[in-house]
Amino acid sequence: MLYWVFMKTYYPTIGLEIHAELSTASKMFCSCKNDPDETRPNVNICPICMAHPGTLPVANKEAIRKVITVGLALGANIADFSEFDRKNYFYPDIPKGYQISQYKYPIVSGGSLNGFAITRIHLEEDTGLSKHDRGDFTLVDYNRAGVPLMELVTEPVIHSASDAASFARELQLLLRTLGVSEANLEKGEMRVEPNISLSDDPSKFGTKVEVKNLNSFKSVEKAIEYELARMQALYEAGRADEIVQETRGWDENKQSTFSQRSKENANDYRYFPDPDLPKMKLHSAFDLETMKMELPELPDAKRARYISLGVKAADAEIFVYNAELAKFFEEVIKGKDAAFTQTASNYIINDIKAELPNVEHFAELIGMVQAGEITSRGAKDLLVEIITTPASPKAIATQKGLLQQNDPEALKAIVLQVIADNAKIVADYRAGKEAAIQGLVGQVMKLSKGSANPGLALQLLKDTI
Image (cartoon, rainbow, N blue to C red; front, side, top):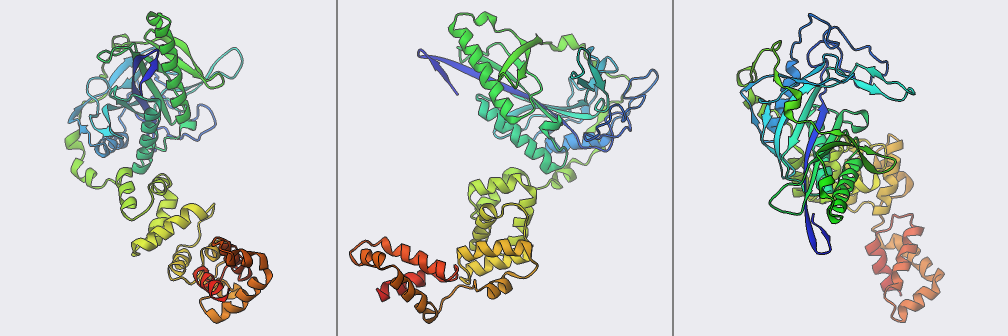
């Protein structure tokens, strides 16, 4: 994306830091329950995650496995040697006065997603949750403190707000596909923090600003757009020096960012290896080849497979994002040909609104459409019926007279009645208005309750008129 004002070009650069809580039974360094749905404050805590003197952390191997799984799915490098570090800073939601994180030796490095390069993925513990809604004081809920938290950092290679939001959506989809995180933004299980800069020199980065803890994809896009516009306005006013390296927040109501604090550097955190946790040799602790072979079908591969079956790209995207609908689709099309698959996809996407029908009955319904036994209108009516009743579509169609009428003699009486009842339309058609006959076809379909073969109805109308 290029921003033009008075023929001057500006170059936006965006990197993303994305945190995702991992779906493990227990926290990162203790046996407390990891429960994002717990509403009672400070019940999933213990002396370890509350940093009582003399307590020692023990790393959660399953959390490490999940981060490795993400790295394998992204085609990244999995470190052999890794370790945990102490990241020192003092906030009320950090009980120890430091966070156990990773600095020099992350578990994952490299890889890509959506065509954008990834710098690293490391593992750390989450903080507690500060509650600011109690008037003039703040309370802290430590249920979240110590929950395993994956942090993914991209290279600064994204150049538009829409691409940044798309990357975050695709990461959420991947995490859910792998079963490593629910990544619900509204619950705080996934938080997106873009680093944004704007430059008037394509060979240089501008001053970087970070916007913290965005909790919706729309907010990600809006916050980046706002920051780029703010920076551009300062450039145009000759006040580019007012763009400083800082952390900013996002005000959803005002749809604008606001300054929070100056941005820390790595030196400010005084990282050093955590002496209470052993060094890790990951290649001997995990069977990486087996883990790679056990990866599920990834979203990109699934998209490509559906499209190769003749599914429209937009419909394939819906299946990729909706696991329940995709499972239903897969069961319906098992062993079927391309024409059946395409028809089934169209009906699932366009006509199933809420509850899914029985797989066998739906497959039978699509087979009846393919065989010309029912019309499209009849299929839509039957779809409603097979969701609410246990009978087969063929039995319902027979009972309700929805089987397509392909017998010319059976349709002849309906055609004659339609011609007699629509003298003006017949006259228009005889006068050369070819499109008029479609109105007569519609009347035949209506009188037959959708059971007439439209092609046969058209031919009979032409022959009779």
